[in-house]
Image (cartoon, rainbow over all chains, first blue to last red; front, side, top):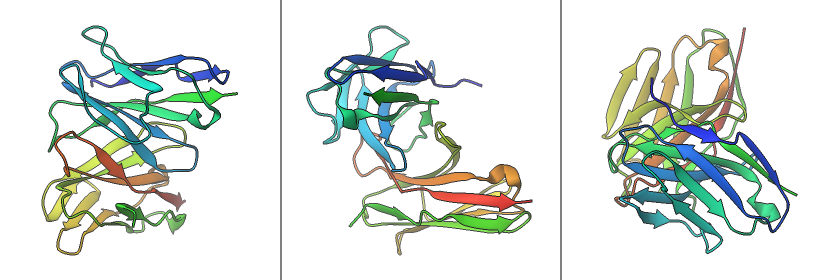
Length: 114
Length: 112
């Protein structure tokens, strides 16, 4: 069964450093998403991406964040200068369509900022 | 007011019990609703997807949506210890970007 994969599973970084989180969405999916979940809190939407453009972004997704689909299979989230409060689980998701279509989530990357 | 509200629990039931998990939402523009199961430190796993008011059944799981009262439910019949997890409700469709709004999640423990 196709699945969304994410690497690394755990990333530890120093405050102020740049990190890139990687995702491989399901191969025939066209819509891609990033969510995050701070420990003990709800899953929060960060950004949706389609046709090489951001469709929507949340207030959390400020200028320190960027997304890219560098090739036909990967989807990345870059945090330019990490802060302590960026420590969270980051989930990538993908769907074949938007609107009334289901999103499948990856296993997540746990980001720890020291 | 939070867009999607869910009682975090925890909810503890004996094996074999019927479990009822509930969410309310405030945005009448939401068009579709999903239930995900999440094990500790893992990604959400899709359980059920519903688009309209009414019931949808899949094995031991039944999802129910009442758009008039903005209320969504997930019922688990014959609960098993392996059902112990956090259950997340999510709502979407207020725009056309696929954005999902999640509830807090309800932690369920099924005791043998």
